[in-house]
Image (tube, rainbow, N blue to C red; front, side, top):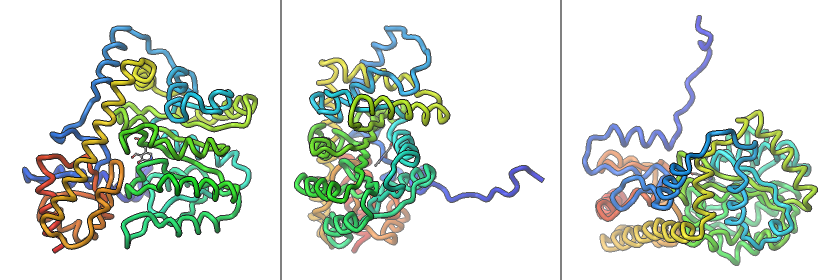
Length: 401
Ligand code: PLP
C-alpha cells in the first residue's frame, strides 16, 4: 500500500481551471478573461520599461546574492511604506510603523493573519466582504482565524450594498477584525466612495473594530497612486492602528517576482520594536527570509526620482487602457441593444468587472464563442483589447438575448 493511499483528490482551483480550458480550445478567436494579470493592447504580458531599466542597472551593479534580513530589504520596505502611507504620515515621521517585506500580497496576508491569530486580543474573528478574493478565506482559516462575512455586493444594482455592509459591521461584536479591500475590490470592481470611506472609518472606530487593509492594486485602479490610497491614508489620519498588505504584482507587473509588504501602525517606537521582533518570529519558520531580486527592482524604481516619475506614467497607462476598454465594451453592448443595464461596466474599477452574467450564460460563452471567464461572471478587463472587445461584446449580446 502506498503511503499516500488515503489522499483523496481536492477540487481544482476555479481560476486556474478556466485557463486550462482556454488552453485546450483550438479556436483562433478564443479569449481568456479568467486570469488576473495585465495584458497589453496586443493581449501579451507586459514588462514595464522602468522594470527593464532597473534590471539593467542591477545587472551592471553585479550585486551579490546574499541572504536578506528576515523582514527583508530595508530600502525596499521604507519606500513601500512611503508609497502607501505618504512620506509625511505620522506613523512614519514618528517611527512607529512595523513593516516586513513579504512574498507578494498573498504572503503579506499570510503573515498578517498569523500575527492576528497570535496577538489580536479582542477577537480572532475576521469579517470578509461577500464576495471576496477567494484566497482570503483559506489564508484566514490556515492562520487560525474564524471567518465571518459582511454584505458588500448588491446583485440587483450590480453595485455596493452600503447599508447592508454597515449593518453587518455594526452587528459584529465590538473589537472584531474587519478586512477591507483598499481599492479595486476583487472580484466585483465596486469600491466605496470617499464619503462612504469616511463613514466606515467612524463606524469602525465606534465599534472598536480593527481595520485590516488589503491593497493589491495601488495605482492600478484609478491610475493615481494617491487616489487609490485614499482609504488607507484617511483611516491612518483618523488614528486607526491599521494593518496593511501591499503587493507590487499588479502596479509594477512583478507577478512572478513575489514582492510585497505587510505593515502595522503601532503606538510608539517601543511598541514598533516589539511588533517587529514578533514578525521575525513568525517569518523565520515560514520561509526564513524573502527573495531579493524583486525588492531590489522596486527600490530602484521608487528610490530614483526619474524612474519613479516614469513609473507613475506607466501605471497610469495600464489603468487607462483598462478604463478605455470599459468604455468600448459598454458602448458596444449598448449599440448592439443588449438587454439589461450595463453602466456598472464603466463605474467599476480595477482589473475586474462583475458583469452580472449568469452561470448558464458563462457556459454558453465558452461553448459557443470560446470565451472563458469564471462562473460568477467576473471578467478580467485586462484580457480585452481593440482586437477582441467587439467580438466579446457581440458574444455577450447573443448569450443574454
Ligand atoms: N489581494 C487581492 C484582493 C488580490 O486580488 C490579489 C491578487 O489577485 C492579492 C491580494 C495577492 O496577489 P499577489 O500575491 O500576487 O500579490
